[in-house]
Image (cartoon, rainbow, N blue to C red; front, side, top):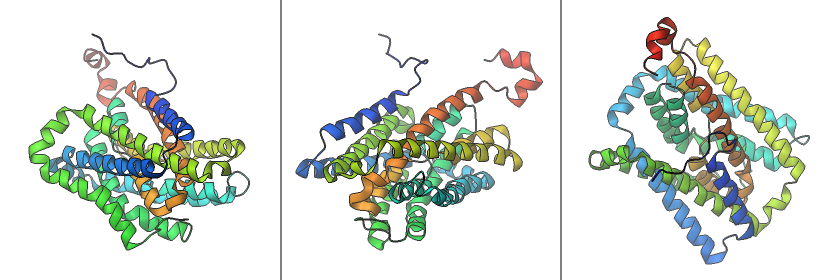
Length: 340
């Protein structure tokens, strides 16, 4: 029986529909009391399992090969942890005209979050870019973000963490236990389970998306119970989306043309653009829950909106890049067309 597929002409990715549906369920039926504790524990476990699978998927050889391409990885890390935060700081001028303090705090936090792994790999593959580089870049960014994101948050956000732990030894330890330890465990067990994980990529994708949906439901439920959504008007929401659209456009242009100025080849430029312009919900949401506590739901709203936006825009760009002629195809168009 032929598997049902999402129509290619549909403008909205099915995962975005699931995200919106999850937000709607949390608004109508938020988890409370013991149920909220159970959902939170389940979400934490799912994210830990996700990073365990990330570790099991990344081979030591890929990691070592990736380290040799240090210019590419430094460029991506620079985009993720330098360019993005600078743009987030610059957005302060939009307060209070387009953003209020709480939304700017969330916007600034999203600029501190590491890059995605799954999305950057998928889009790089579609666009015929350097997939091994995207795998390593996403993994390196996530590992660096475990320490770099809380450090940057401590410096740039200061005492604006609300009811969370903020930056502290306990907060960093909690993030390390949830993200880094499972990743290292996956690396250690890769010899025995790595082949299975690589062969069943759909499992990683399912856990990736399922973990994010659980964390989104948990965060939005907390927001509903505490009444934080009443703090955001429809006008402010539209203004936030407009600001994030500009942010994404600036970063996409900077990663593509900046990589060209640095004399990277086409395949590397593709990897730099997708790994350097995306932000990870899987890493950002658990970090926000630790750092912001009761205010995490409002703090992650900009990140959630940006994540959905980046998926839609990156999908369009990846499909356009897929049709770009490669250098070899430009030199031998007839030979290239025979392989398509």
